[in-house]
Image 1 (cartoon, rainbow, N blue to C red):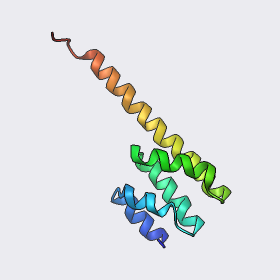
Image 2: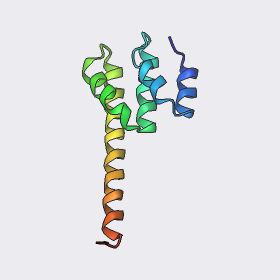
Image 3: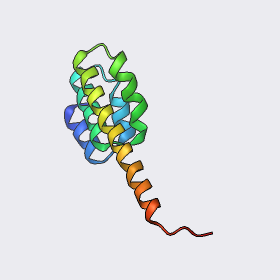
Image 4: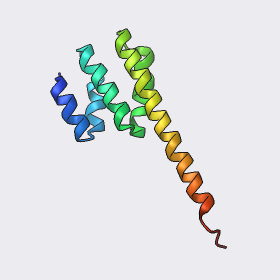
Length: 95
């Protein structure tokens, strides 16, 4: 069982695996903070666990936090892909 302080430390250290494990914590407040922290980090590994949480968690507040965090992760991934495409279009083509 994690504490909110431990979730904050995991977020600050970008401990995505630890935050994903915290999504299974019995305390719904810990799960909310873990989900939002994963959204803040926006690591692609968080996408699937957050997708599951937004429909499967028994707590409405956790499902809402997971849905918000999922949107942040997906949005960040879209930004990265758009930037990558923009960069590639500006690079000279070599044959």
